[in-house]
Structure formats: C-alpha cells, structure tokens
Length: 125
Image 1 (cartoon, one colour):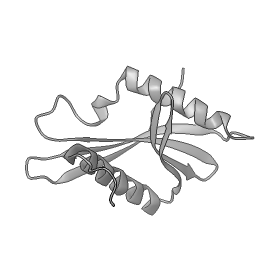
Image 2 (cartoon, rainbow, N blue to C red):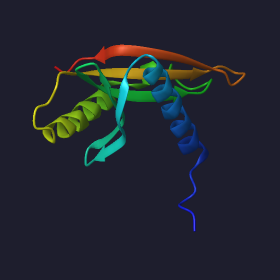
Image 3 (cartoon, rainbow, N blue to C red):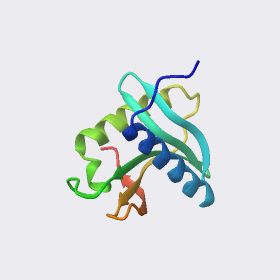
Image 4 (spheres, rainbow, N blue to C red):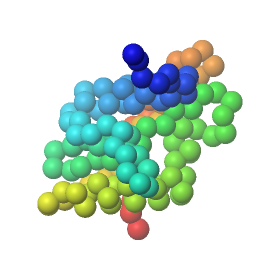
C-alpha cells in the first residue's frame, strides 16, 4: 500500500527543496532537518554553516506568476518563519547563533531553473 498521492505542486516543491539542499551541501552546509513542522508552520530546511544554524526557505516560481520567487517571501511569511524557528530553537539546550536564508528558484518559459541563494535574507526585529 502506498501513501497519499502528491499533487504536481507538491512534487515541484519537493524537487525544489532537494535541489536547494544539494546546492547548499556543495557549498559546505550540513543538513540538520527537512520539512520540520510545528503548530505555526514549517521550516523547509534547517542546516549548519559552521557554528551558525541556518533556517532556509525554499521558493519556486513559474513564469507568469506575480513577482519572483524571492519576492514571494513577504512580511507575513517572514513572521511565520521566525515564529517556527523560535519554537525550533526552544527545543535546544544551548541554541546557537542563527540566520534566515532564502533559496529562490525562478523557472524560465523553457522550464530551466535559475537558483538564487540569498544569505541573511531577513533579520528578526
């Protein structure tokens, strides 16, 4: 018996997360968690960059959508990510320094993806 079928959007999202994780690993980051869920939302990727814990939001946009993938991480999304990261950090006995990155994947009309890794995409206020 197999699990529930995933929609095309879910399949594309999972593929984008795998691509982002692979890119970040090649750049020297170490995976810690994937799709960490809590009551306020989900953290796509949690990775280590040396001593820094990195919360990574992965966004993919197809042509014709409103704005770029990076632009889709607006104030409401950032607030949810900060709340989820806070809950994640509360589980740790000695929380390390952390940052928020975005991996934006914009698809061109031919289906090719352009990856943009935005380190320190936003700060907590």
